[in-house]
Amino acid sequence: MAENLLITNDDGIYAEGIQLLSQVLFDSGRYKLAVVAPDHERSAVGHAITMHRPLRVEQVSFLHNPALSGWAVNGTPSDCVKLAVEALLEERPSLIISGINRGSNLGTDVLYSGTVSAAVEGIILGIPSVAVSLTERGRHEDYIFAAEFVRDLIPHLLEEKLPAGTLLNINVPADRNAVKGVRVTRLGTRRYRNCFDRRTDPRGMIYYWLAGELVEGEEEEDSDVWAVREGYISMTPVQFNLTNEAIIPHLEKMVARMGMSGRQK
Amino acid sequence: MAENLLITNDDGIYAEGIQLLSQVLFDSGRYKLAVVAPDHERSAVGHAITMHRPLRVEQVSFLHNPALSGWAVNGTPSDCVKLAVEALLEERPSLIISGINRGSNLGTDVLYSGTVSAAVEGIILGIPSVAVSLTERGRHEDYIFAAEFVRDLIPHLLEEKLPAGTLLNINVPADRNAVKGVRVTRLGTRRYRNCFDRRTDPRGMIYYWLAGELVEGEEEEDSDVWAVREGYISMTPVQFNLTNEAIIPHLEKMVARMGMSGRQK
Image (cartoon, rainbow over all chains, first blue to last red; front, side, top):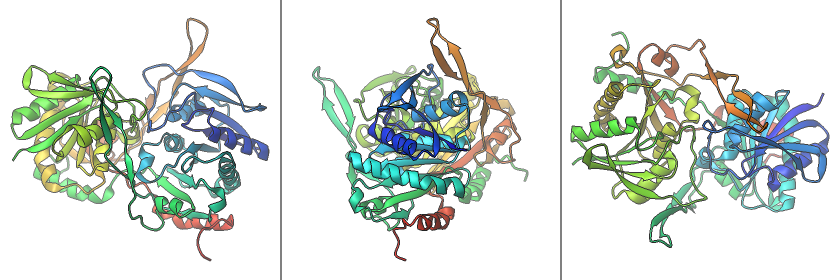
């Protein structure tokens, strides 16, 4: 029986990355695909969900393939995954793939990434999830290359079973001819300089644009930032087990010194 | 010399929680305060940042205290922190406090929380940060109680120095008379049932509302969900060291089986 896959992204359902990914997976003939994605670009939305207005869903036809259709949602990537799994799909997907994003999602940037947040929503719902991005602005054939890599990876992911609460964040270098292979990586750091441009509008009012020039730093070997720069596909296991266990005893002592401890003496 | 504190939230600068927190900290006479917060409510925005439109800042006067003023920003909590630190403030804050939120931010909900995301932005910028929420919908005097708790906690936080990359997520039960003390906690789990209501609008079109009824489950002692339910203030150290190191060797083997390893044999 064909496995169910849910495809989403944050560039919007009409973006090249999701269209080509869906086409390549469709052409493989191996999967039952559901494509549920935002109706327009939702970059840098982080893990936002829509609570204060209704979500609407529109069925859209896809590329020039009438057998392949999708749902456009007026919400964020997290909304799309939640709505797909909880309301739209008849069957629970075996795997969620978010992408292929236009531009990398590396290091601490994953906290802002709509692409990654869709995969986070997936693992919250208990479904194995993968976020896939193409670095820089890849060309048509580079998206195809990345999509084919995902196609070949899926059987392994379905077999391996990632641990609950862990997603894979994959970044593919834009030039497919220079790709040296895959490195399993750690999230690196991304630092920005001069984050805001202060400007004056035509009516003399001040406004600010987020600029955020990337600072190229020394990166440890096997960070995702390093791997992609060196021409590797980076594959980072990202978890959301967020409690810092190590400092709990230290905080217990602090609270005791405040005279506020809720523990029996 | 008075320490600089940055205060923000996600309920908006006119919300009771941030106004009372600012007033209590102002009255302590110990700190130089900067209040930079969204111009209206931005709940469940996660770690969103605004990239595609300009941010505007308006100076607003605060309560009936002319000595206390703030900046209202047409952006998310993360925008407020980034903009404050990178563009608005002359001095770097020693500590960022996000709150006091109207309603709890417990367990996995922190991934959606604008309140917590402001503290995440703080630690990305290398500044110790705390998120504070009042469970349910507290009354005026409960906010005062929570604000006074924060006031008394601050000297300890300034002295202790939290590890880089770790924020404190604090939830205060709404009834101040029933508070039994502080428990240092782990993030629990929050599960929701029947997440979406499917409805028909007056013109016969389908729409979906996120409903999300909370499922009360068995919670381990010392989860934040448990602690607050038992009448304790929960204090959870939350980290954003997201790489799952443990499964890296396993993934290396998977990639090798695919014939795609970027490592020397």
